[in-house]
Amino acid sequence: MKLILKENVAGLGYKDDVVEVKDGYGRNYLIPQGKAIIASDAALKQLKEDLKQRAHKIAQLKADAEAAAKALEGVKLTIAAKTSNNGTVFGSVNAAHIAEALEKLGHNVDRKIIVLKQPVKEIGVYTATIKFHKEVEAEVEFEVVSEEE
Image (tube, rainbow, N blue to C red):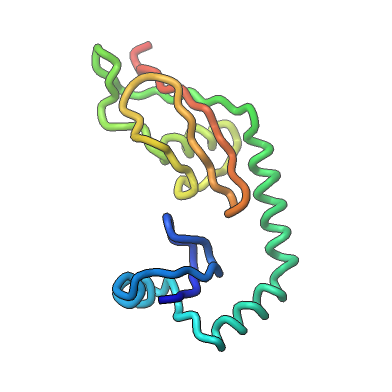
């Protein structure tokens, strides 16, 4: 089933992408939730016209995303977490912790666009990917330390 996404869907695509999904996923989840519409000829024609009209706005959004990514170059974060004696974090460090640490440095980043490759459950140095735009990503290095130190 071919669908046009009306919003970003993690693991599937970005707004205005035309994607191919299984019928059940499209009919039972994406369409009822308002996340996609069926990619009929009329809908595809409308999408093409909308993209042509919004080309300038999309270019501006990409430029803003590139500026935000450039501002994060070389940023290193230190996140304090409660840990056990052997260095295991109670719970885990997640995207909300990283967004909060970035905000303290003056970078306003939504936690929903921060991606961690694996759960952070121990003290150490890790990398988080921030997806500002479908074509613009930034990597931020962060160190998890014990609160007791």
